Image 1: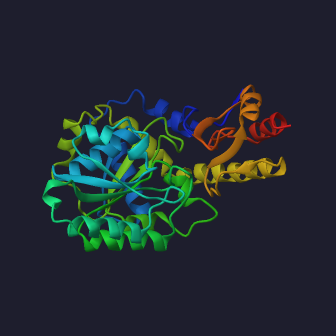
Image 2: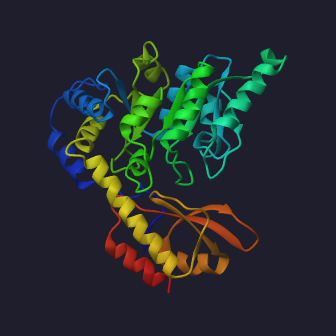
Length: 342
């Protein structure tokens, strides 16, 4: 059976496994103080165009979201996110578990708009009972969104302007950032993300790494004693070199971007296959996640040969399902998918 279930179902890119194997017997200091972590940070700083950026490596996306949000918010603050945002829907209440509420606002195709955000915050401060409410303390975006859609540079700048007016940080979840940056339909670069956002992370787990996310504070604004906060939350990896080696590899000779571009190319070919076969898409996604509308019979038939993810119920007879490409997707996989669709 071929799988398009997600972009982290395969282990890791061969170059990463090779580097891990090569460094396996080295005796290295712990907690990310090793030479590979240092080298990886310098490469990421260069790629972001921020020589003074502060970078920390964490293991997974949910852990990273919870650590960033809980370490940056005051105890009476919450984080604003789209109703479809990852922290709102698919993180099992991890943010609320830290004592901070997710403040949901309306979205379209997974994205929030600056005017909706502005109105939400303005309405909060116009409420005379605000002292009895959770204060908006941060804005969370995912890019790409949970529907594979992307913010434009203008949209990001408009949202950032609202954040600046109310003096709250803009946090961009980049679990799949590589696929957004390498999309054929984007005007956003990594340097734009670093310039516009107050904190973001570069996802490795879903972009070729065995595990790992690189948290970037681009404006010398990392919370005081951040590593202590990371450890307090159980998120500091003793064998930190494991993350450092992987990100050092990903940011050597543009491997991170090459992996992402490959997945985008495979996704575009996949779209052509579905369109040729007469299937409908739930929305237009310019990234590696494609959302296709299937009826129950099609799901049962296709599911015998292909793995994919259920996303949401569309109506009584149709479902939205997700097909994701990655570094490991091959031309042969696409040929087998096309054959299964016959």
